[in-house]
Image 1: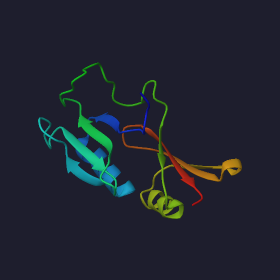
Image 2: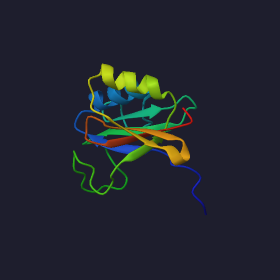
Image 3: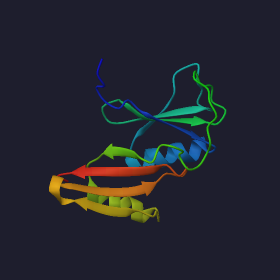
Length: 132
Protein backbone atom coordinates (compact mmCIF):
# COMPACT_ATOMS: atom_id res chain seq x y z
CA UNK A 1 0.00 0.00 0.00
CA UNK A 2 1.19 3.52 -0.77
CA UNK A 3 -0.30 6.99 -0.69
CA UNK A 4 -0.68 8.38 -4.20
CA UNK A 5 -1.85 11.92 -3.35
CA UNK A 6 -3.97 13.92 -0.94
CA UNK A 7 -7.56 13.30 -2.01
CA UNK A 8 -9.49 16.17 -0.40
CA UNK A 9 -9.95 18.28 2.72
CA UNK A 10 -13.30 18.21 4.54
CA UNK A 11 -14.45 21.38 6.28
CA UNK A 12 -17.43 21.42 8.63
CA UNK A 13 -19.01 24.86 8.80
CA UNK A 14 -21.93 26.77 10.25
CA UNK A 15 -22.03 28.76 6.98
CA UNK A 16 -22.20 26.35 4.03
CA UNK A 17 -23.10 29.06 1.52
CA UNK A 18 -20.44 31.56 2.60
CA UNK A 19 -17.67 28.98 2.87
CA UNK A 20 -18.51 27.43 -0.51
CA UNK A 21 -18.59 30.87 -2.11
CA UNK A 22 -15.20 31.72 -0.52
CA UNK A 23 -13.50 28.68 -2.08
CA UNK A 24 -15.24 29.09 -5.44
CA UNK A 25 -14.36 32.76 -5.78
CA UNK A 26 -10.88 32.90 -4.27
CA UNK A 27 -9.51 29.75 -5.91
CA UNK A 28 -11.80 29.65 -8.96
CA UNK A 29 -12.92 26.16 -8.01
CA UNK A 30 -16.03 24.64 -9.55
CA UNK A 31 -18.76 24.34 -6.91
CA UNK A 32 -20.93 21.23 -7.28
CA UNK A 33 -23.56 19.46 -5.23
CA UNK A 34 -22.17 16.44 -3.40
CA UNK A 35 -23.46 13.02 -4.48
CA UNK A 36 -26.50 11.41 -2.85
CA UNK A 37 -27.36 10.73 -0.11
CA UNK A 38 -25.88 14.17 0.65
CA UNK A 39 -27.95 17.14 -0.48
CA UNK A 40 -27.19 20.67 -1.75
CA UNK A 41 -28.37 21.91 1.65
CA UNK A 42 -25.72 20.00 3.59
CA UNK A 43 -22.74 19.47 1.26
CA UNK A 44 -20.93 21.25 -1.55
CA UNK A 45 -17.79 19.89 -3.19
CA UNK A 46 -15.19 22.19 -4.75
CA UNK A 47 -13.45 20.85 -7.88
CA UNK A 48 -10.27 21.90 -9.66
CA UNK A 49 -9.91 22.21 -13.45
CA UNK A 50 -8.94 18.53 -13.71
CA UNK A 51 -12.23 17.46 -12.11
CA UNK A 52 -10.73 16.53 -8.73
CA UNK A 53 -12.68 17.37 -5.57
CA UNK A 54 -10.23 19.44 -3.52
CA UNK A 55 -12.53 20.55 -0.68
CA UNK A 56 -15.67 18.95 0.70
CA UNK A 57 -17.67 21.65 2.47
CA UNK A 58 -20.28 20.24 4.86
CA UNK A 59 -22.87 21.79 7.14
CA UNK A 60 -22.77 21.00 10.85
CA UNK A 61 -25.77 18.69 10.46
CA UNK A 62 -24.45 16.87 7.39
CA UNK A 63 -24.59 13.07 7.87
CA UNK A 64 -21.16 11.48 8.33
CA UNK A 65 -20.21 7.81 8.03
CA UNK A 66 -17.64 8.22 10.79
CA UNK A 67 -19.30 10.60 13.20
CA UNK A 68 -17.35 12.34 15.94
CA UNK A 69 -17.53 15.63 17.74
CA UNK A 70 -16.40 18.48 15.49
CA UNK A 71 -15.68 21.94 16.81
CA UNK A 72 -16.34 24.88 14.55
CA UNK A 73 -13.50 27.40 14.51
CA UNK A 74 -9.80 26.84 15.17
CA UNK A 75 -8.89 23.58 13.54
CA UNK A 76 -7.84 21.39 16.45
CA UNK A 77 -4.80 19.25 15.70
CA UNK A 78 -4.72 20.30 12.03
CA UNK A 79 -2.49 23.37 11.83
CA UNK A 80 -2.97 24.17 8.13
CA UNK A 81 -3.85 22.89 4.69
CA UNK A 82 -1.19 23.39 2.01
CA UNK A 83 -2.09 23.78 -1.65
CA UNK A 84 0.29 23.68 -4.61
CA UNK A 85 -0.75 26.73 -6.64
CA UNK A 86 0.10 28.89 -9.64
CA UNK A 87 -0.63 32.56 -10.27
CA UNK A 88 1.12 34.17 -7.29
CA UNK A 89 0.55 37.81 -8.30
CA UNK A 90 -3.09 37.15 -9.20
CA UNK A 91 -3.72 35.54 -5.80
CA UNK A 92 -2.13 38.47 -3.96
CA UNK A 93 -4.41 40.80 -5.93
CA UNK A 94 -7.50 38.72 -5.10
CA UNK A 95 -6.70 38.67 -1.40
CA UNK A 96 -6.06 42.42 -1.36
CA UNK A 97 -9.29 43.12 -3.28
CA UNK A 98 -11.24 41.08 -0.71
CA UNK A 99 -9.59 42.97 2.16
CA UNK A 100 -8.20 39.72 3.55
CA UNK A 101 -5.24 39.44 5.89
CA UNK A 102 -2.35 37.41 4.55
CA UNK A 103 1.35 36.88 5.13
CA UNK A 104 4.06 36.24 2.56
CA UNK A 105 7.10 34.01 2.93
CA UNK A 106 9.94 32.98 0.63
CA UNK A 107 12.00 29.82 0.88
CA UNK A 108 14.79 30.76 -1.51
CA UNK A 109 16.67 27.46 -1.20
CA UNK A 110 13.86 25.59 -2.97
CA UNK A 111 12.41 28.39 -5.14
CA UNK A 112 9.20 28.63 -3.15
CA UNK A 113 6.97 31.63 -2.49
CA UNK A 114 4.17 31.19 0.02
CA UNK A 115 1.00 33.02 0.96
CA UNK A 116 -0.70 32.26 4.29
CA UNK A 117 -4.35 33.24 4.82
CA UNK A 118 -7.45 31.90 6.59
CA UNK A 119 -10.84 30.81 5.32
CA UNK A 120 -14.06 32.06 6.98
CA UNK A 121 -13.87 29.17 9.50
CA UNK A 122 -10.34 29.89 10.69
CA UNK A 123 -8.75 27.15 8.54
CA UNK A 124 -5.18 28.28 7.86
CA UNK A 125 -4.31 27.93 4.16
CA UNK A 126 -0.69 27.66 3.01
CA UNK A 127 -0.57 28.51 -0.69
CA UNK A 128 2.69 27.28 -2.25
CA UNK A 129 4.00 28.70 -5.52
CA UNK A 130 7.06 26.92 -6.95
CA UNK A 131 8.82 28.69 -9.83
CA UNK A 132 5.90 31.11 -10.20
